[in-house]
Image (cartoon, rainbow, N blue to C red; front, side, top):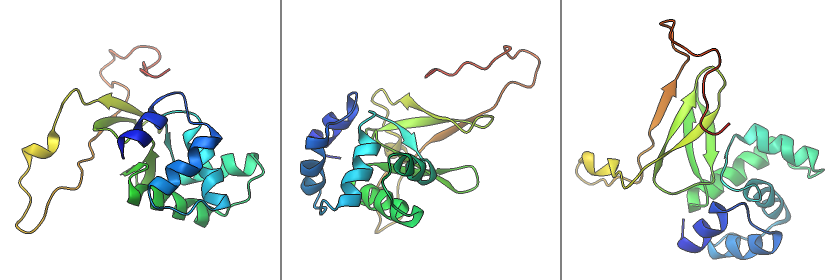
Length: 161
């Protein structure tokens, strides 16, 4: 993601007037559905979301877009770098509006995903790709579950609660 778009998304959210220029900067035509879905996706700051959740938000906002359209838009946004995508639990794709280098905690008991700050961590430098290839990105998901040794707190602590 370019610096301008990263700055727009990293705060509390972007305004409607910023969405069209952001899409156009990434070479995307600002269709009605892309504009509407981008507004829903980016107006709440950094977030981790599935296509199903975004489709439900669109429906609640009376924005009629099929689930296939939501998937297509999110995958297009991931392709151009507006969001990152990664897979957890049985192939569920998570779309992340924070495209900076960072890792994730995945809470197996709730399905929630939270960020782990990278703090200048360059995981890609630990790998040597096969000849003729380069590393595009590295996705690290740390899977968490409640402790099973009797030392768990009554309620697991979630750092973003």
